[in-house]
Image 1 (cartoon, rainbow, N blue to C red):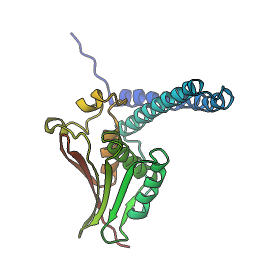
Image 2: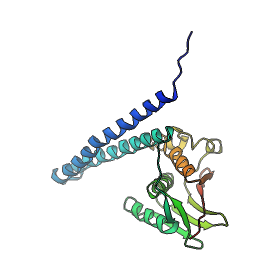
Image 3: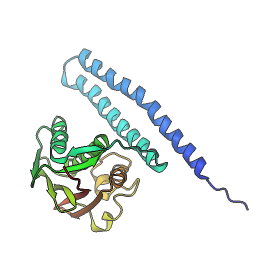
Image 4: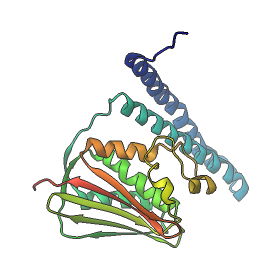
Length: 236
């Protein structure tokens, strides 16, 4: 019996189709998001009525995140993710991402410690923002509201090390080797009902690979997790 093989060109066509569909679906989702704003504006101001558009908006955000992950994964699979690299002062860049995140998590304690600065790397700002926001959002999601998140930047002779540490639920040692695999979700993410496709960390790892950077993780159950990125150091 003959077996069918998927050629590279067929795979590329399929992934480009997924990429195109993902972009097409973003437009109606953006419109739904806009309509929820007007619903909140014109609905009665009682608490129950206002909850419905808020819930719709959250689900739209979730769908948009999933679509973005699918589109990004399709780009990576056919090696079409292009970078626009420039010199970045890492401390200042991370501070800007923390400021953006505080609007969504105004009560959370996010601390930044920088040892010796300035620290310059070569990178794509949009893609590195994606990396940092993904790791920070995970740290916030898997820790308690009263727990602090620590970000540290430390240079060495050849690299600049960026670490993000939480004091949350942690990851079982048997699962650590799988967390960068596409579609992998930890037991804890399922227990906590955290929605997603399990693509975020796979995308993070691939973006960092394109920056010649490496990411590692250390974790203990009920004690927390630290993700460490090592960027190539460049001269000022």
